[in-house]
Structure formats: C-alpha cells, structure tokens
Amino acid sequence: MAFIDYYKILGVSKTATEKTIKTAYRKLARKYHPDLNPDNKEAEIKFKEINEANEVLSDPENRKKYDKYGKDWKHGEEFEKAQYQRKQRSQHRSGQQGYSAHEYSDFFESMFGGRETSSRQGRYPKFKGQDYHAELHLGLKEVYKAHKQVLTVNNNNIRLTIPAGVENGQVIKIKGKGGQGLNGGPNGDLYIKFIIENHSQFKREGNNLYQNIDLDLYTSILGGEITVNTFNGKVKLKIKPETKNASKVKLKGKGFPIYKKEGKFGDLIITFHIKTPINLSEKEIELFKELQKIKAK
Image (cartoon, rainbow, N blue to C red; front, side, top):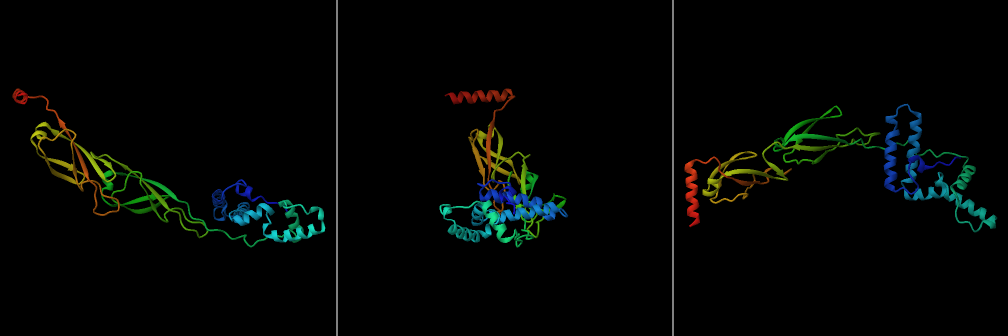
C-alpha cells in the first residue's frame, strides 16, 4: 500500500503549528467542498483526502503516531507487538529502537491486505459561511440621530438601524448576514465599516465638538451677548468683559451623542478669536488715540 503524505496533502511542513494546519485545512476544504464542486469526482476525492489528513494532523496524539508509523497509524500497537516477537527471534536486532513509516506500511499491508478504513469517509464537516465586509459612507449630520438605512450586499437588501454617535472608522458586526453556510453550517457575518465625512463647521473628537468663533474687539473688551450655532440649533451665549484672544468656553451637553447611551452627549468647546477692527472712521481713530493717552498716564 502506497504511503500517503498528509502534510503534502494540506500543503504544510512537518514542523507546522496547529494553527497553520487548521488554516490550511479550512482553505482547502472550502475550495474542494462537494457543494461548490457538484459532479466533480476529482474534487470529491481531494475533499476526502483533506478531511482524512486533518483528522490525523489536527490531533496531537494522532499526529505523533502518524509521524512514527505513517498513514496506518491506528494499527501501531499491532505493529509493535509483531516487531517485538520478531526481535525475540532475531537477537541481532535487539539494539534497534524505532521503526520507519515505510517499514510499518509494509507490515500493515501484509497483515491486513491493504484494506482501507472508511468509517470517516463521507462524513463532511460543517462550515461557516463567508464573512462579508462593507463600507457605509455617511455625513456627520446623518449620524447625529439614529436612523434606518437599507444596505445592498451581494444583491441582498439589508435593513439597518444606524445608532447615533457612530465614529469614523468604527466597525459593527451584523450576525448571520454574510454568506450561506456549507453543509448545514451557520451563515457568515456582515462587518460594516463607517466612513464619516464632515462637512460642518465643527470639528469632532470622540464625543466632543470644537468650534472657532470670531469675536469683535468691542464685545471682547466690554462683554455682551452673542448667538452661536450648535449642532442642534442656535443658543445665546454671554461674553465676559475683557475676554482674551484664544480663550475657551465649554457648553456642556452640546456636543455629539454618545454611542449607545441614549440621551447622553459630549460637550461643545468654543475658542474665541478677537478680530482687530479695520477701516476705522476718523472718529474711531480719534477715540483710540484718546484711549491711548489715558492708558499712558
């Protein structure tokens, strides 16, 4: 009986790790699965070989026996007993400690007539369907409130509820909305990556929003009240006298909604930039000069 190299069947080396063997098996089993290769006898044979190789190499004990005895590793005990009896008759072999896979294969063929064990043939494993990956492009204003979207993936329309507060680059998983499972296995999952495009006057960092506001010199010195835009409408804001350039003020709860925390919001941080007046009238220049004289005293 010809020796079958399970490592070669899976395309891995004899020093391959369990993870490498598992990855190689899944890739090949999906490629040659009967559901994907109907009426293909060659693929069917290949699929059985792949499963047989995996059954042996994925189990540490079975793999150890296979490395020692080869394909017919299950009959290793009979082989060792036979060899022991042979050693008793042949004293010149008493110093040998191991036996090659080729030697074992010859023994097995003579002892069992080359019979194939078929208990595991025709027993197909279940495979999870392929995971799908998609990108969904939305504007910043679209993710300020929860809303529904219909996403088309592989010609299937999937109705989604987009939670408020999703971030750029965030990935969410929709369970069971990927490819169909094979041989009764579960469906794959759908992973959606959000690409959030910001065309607003606000800068978003996490749950907080940032905004720059120009403040005229007179209001910055004397104080007053201005109207500012927030993401959810306008609000009136009091300005303290002698407000300095680049000073900041925080509007609590006026930022972006916090993901999956209904009613919770970040803050809006405003930075003031004092505008120097230009195109002054003669009267304004005269008044500034008067102020300059007062300041110099």
